[in-house]
Length: 140
Image (tube, one colour):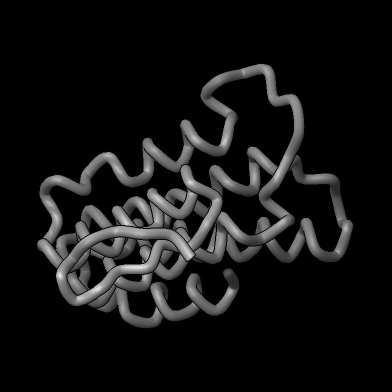
């Protein structure tokens, strides 16, 4: 996840991307604190910090940043640091946070929409989707 955030911050070069760079720094700091045990960071708090730069990257309408964001979504979902049990607040649950992050998907470029849908399907299904050239869907 740290590599994705670093790539996002590096590639967010426009003056409009300051919020994205700041969000990447905040998320990286949160991951560092969590990893080193400086303070206990709850998984939902860590997800919130890491989903924000991914959301901003998707909303940037930059294909390069959006593809970094899709990669980050995949890494976040598969990383145990972001898993938790029994979160009572619905807004703090992984599926809700994930959907809030990808809410801008209909306005994204077609190729980015497809990648976001692949991540969404793998998140719901629990398996990595396999797509053939005919664009039919099956699971491995």
